[in-house]
Length: 562
Image 1 (cartoon, rainbow, N blue to C red):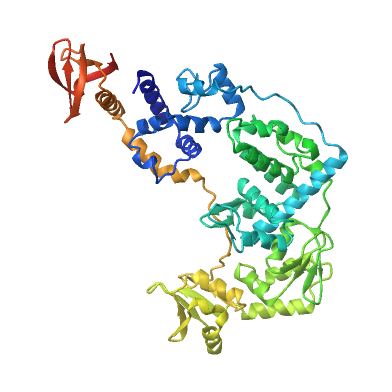
Image 2 (image 1 turned 90 degrees about the horizontal axis):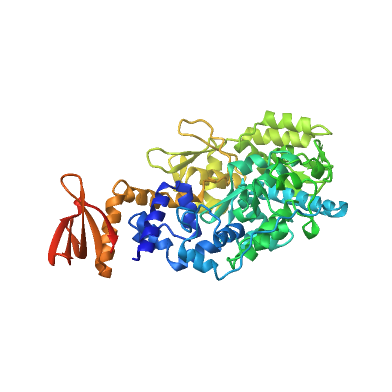
């Protein structure tokens, strides 16, 4: 270990120790550190981390994720604070400076986008409207059933095709892009092999169109990489492709962010800027009025028909649409949408907390034509039958118990092949299954049986089946690693660093000047050639006195290369 590298290693280790946990998590993510694999498993303390990040390949990796202005400042000698690339003065470390000397990187030019003309603005508004509608469809769908992704993290081919077949997206590529946009803005979150709605996503679908767009645009701005940001806003989108000049993967990533911005209506044709995008780009609060003025109008009434359908004469207000879809199956969607009431859809609504009186009141206010008698009859019949099948968990055995006052209905459940996967078997006056209560309940509900789920105290559990997943930060993946490194570093960091320097000197056969604490409080310096370290003692040859010395490590105040 050279004096320069030794100094840099300790400096970086101390900087890492003072950093917040989220800063360390971001650093590990940039360096593609896996919490359960090398080098993480071989790290004992933060000195090991610092040593790793000083290696040439990790320096190159860190520089590849550094944005243009940071690279230009490091190359020109402008002080910048970083965790691993600069010294305490903020200047580039020698290895960093040597790497940047091979490049010719200048700061990004300051420019402002040209305003979009009326035609380009109209096209951008149409894209934004289409995106809001598609995202709402996707998020609402995941509230019932999460999307499936493959091992690479991408949306599965089956899900892409389904979204295209349902006319949510125009192509499989667009379907994947929409889901990635929803994930980037926190409406969806991936967990294991599923992609589900977050709590924020569940709330977002109930907002007005203007509120939906404002929230989506603001979250997209906040999610932009540092190299695209300008304060709270962003730099001219024409500069986005060159924001990370040392990252060969960045051009493709930049195209994704540009595609997101186009979908949300923040970029018009030829990088022109619509009027509603300018305040957000400057870091101000969004003003959706110019955008919504170009969008189709919304309605708050529908026609309820005798054939058990609801016809919306225009775009139904989002909150009304979400609730209506909770008790129907939507058959078509456009500016005029059709919804169909079925026994299964009404049963599903009752299972998720709706009541017959609540539905009647909502539909009476929503309808331009009153509630037709067939629909009134369907709601009443479904409500009367609802709860004939009761699903609960037996605390003693942990098995799910399915009961009903109608014995014939239980016998039907036992032989129904559509729910054969539940493994229902007779046990006294009920059926039992090894599947969980929620799995059994929703399987029965999907098969149109009038089931209810019960809590342990016998009360009705109005469990809303959905794909809501925790939207916690991925930083949690490094929590255990960071805690272990901090514990190992701890108060004994000075002693650990001293032993590290002594080990290096022994390996490299380097002579050291060792400062020894004397009983009177003074220090005495000895020049030693260390030969061994163990049992809390340092052994070495004192060349000046031509003797072998053994010194307690606890008495060594400091060491430095000769």
